[in-house]
Length: 102
Length: 102
Image 1 (cartoon, chains in turn red, green):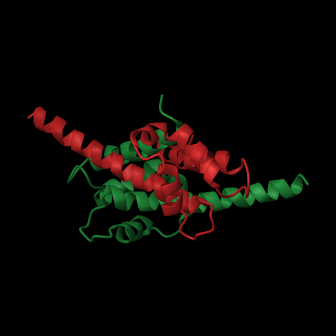
Image 2 (cartoon, chains in turn green, yellow):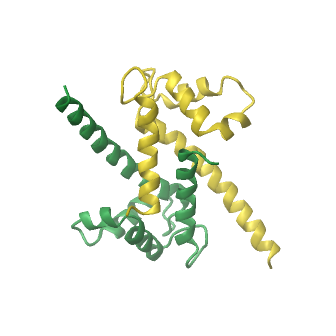
Image 3 (cartoon, rainbow over the protein chains, first blue to last red):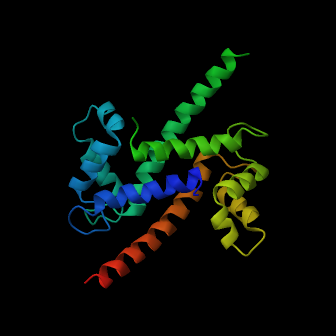
């Protein structure tokens, strides 16, 4: 049985390919596929953004090689950025809880 | 209910903190904590490595700020590297399967 970490890594690959296979090149996300992915998989984050151009801005930031599509490496950098932000919040909460318990 | 991608991101944070909290500073992995994490969570990868110094080598590679411990950002770079390697294999298999079906 895969470990929790292996399952997480598999999920990153599966989610990416679920959307990347919808249109255009099958191994990359078009702007529309990225929007769909974010609306379905990162809806909480997307709702927290007041700028309606968030997906377009992220698309531009992620598309490191400038080909107008997002490959898996570029997609993972979005996941990393969000995970690091979430982990910082988690650590802050943990510290608060620990200081309450002292 | 969290999406598959949100669950994966949460897993990265939870797995890291499950091991980081065992000894030393609670927000970082010592060499021993990293070894434990890799033995339990990445056992398939670890078994595929013939070099018995794999964990030490990875520890050295990950510890970007040279403080002898691995923080979440440094840990995520390991996950990214492995995920990118796995995705490349997945894509290769997908291409093979598609050419068989033609």
